[in-house]
Length: 274
Image: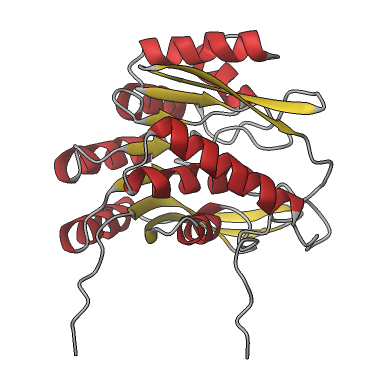
């Protein structure tokens, strides 16, 4: 019997909170990474009581436990990419940054700066935003803010493509290697995302799908990109493929729940024939 050696490509360490409803957070991250052919590890930062109607409770994980989860995964399995989700406090942002610098300095980081809810409410305080921009932003392979988050990070209005461009340029100047300013929150029949890297700019368009099943889209997109980057794809190609995957997941959403339902992460999978 020939022993099959494991393929190390596509190992992604996700540092984020758990969503009991399965549509966002760690659960969405794992599904998206698997759909892109990657391998997901997790450092859970919080347990949320959550469904499609909202967040009903948040229970933070102690910082030393978050650090330990990161440390054991990086030491034993290793990582080809790291993806971060909502990091609610400055102390947590600083701990994540320090641990990654110690144990995974050269591993590309995909940072989804989750800080504004769909309702428009701020999810993190000013100290956490400042920590993110000073600790995690410099050298990040890709930052993936939506329009409201880009406004918080830059202080600039982001209400169209020109605003997205200005925000991306400002974040590149602050040290990011790549920035994807998403346009889903900007009204219009067509959604335009602006990607800027050290190598150039891309405008990525897709028809808007009118649906309430959009819970977890940001987590899903960033994790899909991380899985592809972890398999060696360049940022522009990874973003384009991940966007196509997310578009299909929104299109084929099953309408679960009575609020904002989850996307269908497994839409590409074929049922197993009996």
